[in-house]
Image (cartoon, rainbow, N blue to C red):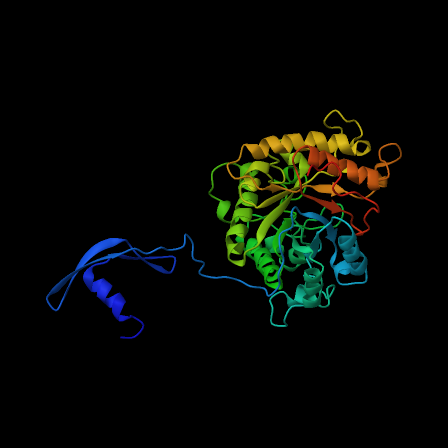
Length: 406
């Protein structure tokens, strides 16, 4: 009788209701009468089914447990694949830090390790991380929670390879900002899939979270909107002007990415400008704090004191790490409290000295300045944070639990 057992056939004949939902066969609890060779039999069948049966369960082969709270640092691919990793792992082992955000697709658009030769990303890959499996095994051994950083729409490499996916001038040149960086077009689903496919590779490597960075249009895009040539894709006939379309496109990308990554049992996080939480939205770059927060597991606002202009009544914010973070996080907490299912708040904090601000506008950031920011978060109910230092040299002697109540 093939794969249908006799009892299943009998149930069908008897009229027990069967449903197929998400690949499961579910029998309703029902009293039925079956006439077998003239003998009347009454049967009550009660079945219990799990609320959810996964149709696909991905297992990377590694075991990483979510820590009590993520306290992490940024790690470039050069550091992750080089000698610096030894000192970074020692930092994890000897302090209360427990997580690393590691570049998988970097700021230039390169994949930071070499995939198989038939991979569509082989030509844009570099062996910065020469042995990804060994790296993941070391992270597992040291109980370091791994987060993959994927830079999305800032991608000079892809923009130059596919100008039709970018923003061009009337002369046909790919537009670049004053740092020589090009962006690809958030309106285009092809760009979405390109980046999410890379994120899936990171999940398959064993990363437990995908952190998308540069989920936005170029800064000041509202001033270039009418000057540059670009395709608005499926948003051509959508309601609203280009300002609202940008917000829609960025938000839709995040929601789509989370949907596609759901099968891989990874969290999705997004880095976002801190000032977006202080505004209804930042339409020039397409970031709406509330709408993005509704579609992620973790929101990571970049609230480095050095990156603010005079705000919160602070004329030189870099001089006031505690006060700046305190005033910011109060606003973010209010916005997240309005959501039915708010994400985890995990801000990026400053562990670098912003000497470029000029004399009198900055102070050296060492242990006391890092601790001041952390303490401000704990006092306002935020237990997670990430530290940024582009060179991956983090301050010594920091108490990463300072001000945290037991």
